[in-house]
Figure (tube, rainbow, N blue to C red):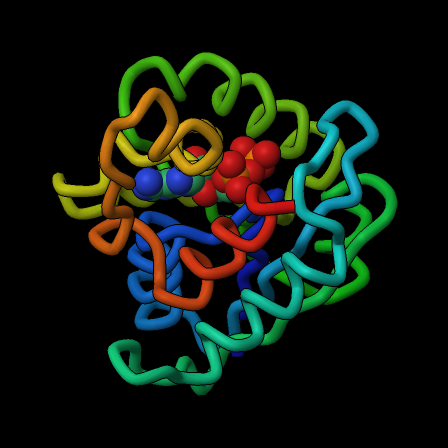
Length: 172
Ligand code: ADP
């Protein structure tokens, strides 16, 4: 039984994240989505809201099948310590472009140095998600509809409940 950890900020979860999750859940017996409480990154959505969105979309919605072997957790400290505690054999990361590589390479090697028994596995999403990032989604949602332009449709990139949450957030 091999468990993999899929860590990230998921601020908010996108179809790019879900693409990687689907591939990981087909490869491993169990995948734990680990939502980081990373001090370096100031998240837009609260931890609870990010968890709620993840729970909803992985539990199955009208256009997304449920993910039966996926759990969602948070971790306060170092990823490798969390992975070790969960008896995980792998850490999953998504690779979109070469620009992701440098930071990912460093992190993977550091993590391997600290826990040699845990391997980082890189997965590539479908080409249609290679340019999707949570930060770009947040920015488009924030400025969409301003200057008299029409609202941008994000339905290709985020599940409906995420699009709704973004709208609500920026209405406030
Ligand atoms: P982090 O702060 O750890 O980068 P993210 O939520 O931005 O958190 O990303 C979590 C993981 O998901 C990372 O490995 C990232 O490369 C991957 N990821 C994010 N968006 C995509 C996407 N569109 N396609 C593939 N992987 C993605």
